[in-house]
Length: 156
Image (cartoon, rainbow, N blue to C red):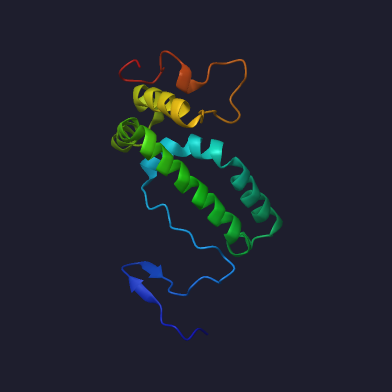
């Protein structure tokens, strides 16, 4: 048994045990789901190598990935934080409009395509990161590039 007493905050257990020294320290992202969804494809584009390393580690660790792959997980977090920082620095207004739209429309991407187009353009011009949907058919126009959205209330 552990000699430390757990601290409870409502229904959340806060574990005060420090991480081992071999795991690199990283500041947590500290954002809600809407900004993460808005920047998700850009995070995927820049952080693909780190994400792949983390997934390989989790696959090879046979169920102990949370503990054995903390180092790789911290690299993913650090990379995602750098993307969010760069997007905030170069495209803050477009980014804010897009994630607020997502937040106000139950995270429905199709509701916010107009804001998404301006964000994608700004991020590509500033950071050279492009939104590419994995697994999208090569012979079709990607859903975010279509002129008319099928489900859109506003026809954009």
